[in-house]
Amino acid sequence: MADGADSSPRSCYVYWSIKRTKKGSRFSATGREMDNSKRTVVVTGFGPFGEHAVNASWVAVQELKKLGLGGEVDLHVSEVPVEYQTVQSLVPSLWKKYHPLLVVHVGVSGMATTVTLEKCGRNHGYKGLDNSSFCPDSQCCIVGGPDCINSVIDMESVCKRVTASGLGVAVSVSKDAGRYLCDFTYYTSLYLSHGRSAFVHVPPLGKPYSGEDLGRALQAIIQEMLELLDQAEEKIHCQQHFH
Image (tube, rainbow, N blue to C red):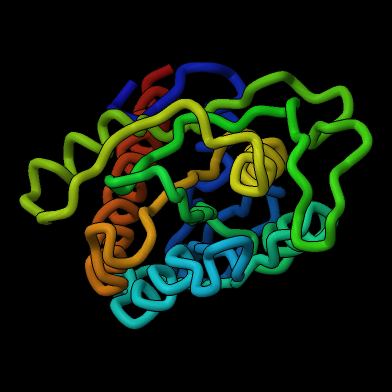
């Protein structure tokens, strides 16, 4: 498989489902045919919480919106309140409304000094109260769901590619998104998309990067993710052609 591809049957299904079937058309993750040639990407950032009166993640996403992802990508952005119950309804609605090729969630980490690519989301261990002083009684995202879901995107490869591009923003990889709303959102999205989601943690503004810096970093990261998805799609198409 090409960089970023997962050879599991689940991932093969996901990549097949987005394969273009004729000029100007493709199928969404639900199998629904879409009559446009653009790829749709949804990017979310979080609203204020705790000491983060201005959430760097939403600032970064707004900067990304100004920059765009190129003429072939239809970019939609959404601010997510720091509330478990809102996430449980909002994330599915984004997938249903836009039928995106990829959803990238962005959150702020007070401990981060780099832009951090999260490899996986975890189902259990949610004990922190949200902005509404609520926490699920089950302390999990999806009752009966797997403990951990990995993104089908090879985050190590994305990190290496962005670093090599000379962006000027440090990028790293993590496999612990924190067991709060960031992790909760990521797992929920991964579960719905069979792994075709991503999560990026950014540092607080000015520590050390500006909102503009973070927006440029998101642009570069997501463009690399899309490139890896394209490579995986082409690889599977070739395998289907020769078998």
